[in-house]
Image (cartoon, rainbow, N blue to C red; front, side, top):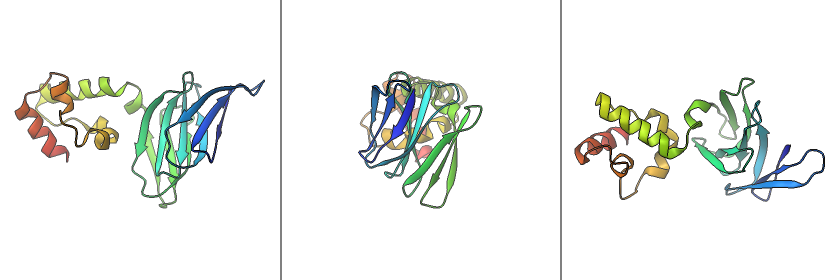
Length: 163
């Protein structure tokens, strides 16, 4: 398979031999500057002018994670040779390294794990969820309470220490 980046805000997975389109990766708000497969071929990373990079499932085309943090368009993204990290570069004149282990599990499972660590240790343990901060902010129900794992008092403590 091959993956292409496009100014139509998408990336496309195609059969390398026939060129037949397998999936369209939709989610970026502006052009996609680069797209690359992980070394094991299971994931794809894209970089976009919308200030984000995204991780996708290479088999299904499903979005796995949005990497937020750059202040200007992301010009390129690549996996490390061992596939354990992603590096992104941006017009904001920074490069960032992202730990792939943070994105190995679905968001709901990452939330459950973080809530369980918080309940066990009494310490705020959402560092693995830092990239989900924006998507969780402002929701009516907190993620731990939604999972039935923490009391409102625990959540208030966690909420105010996180933001």
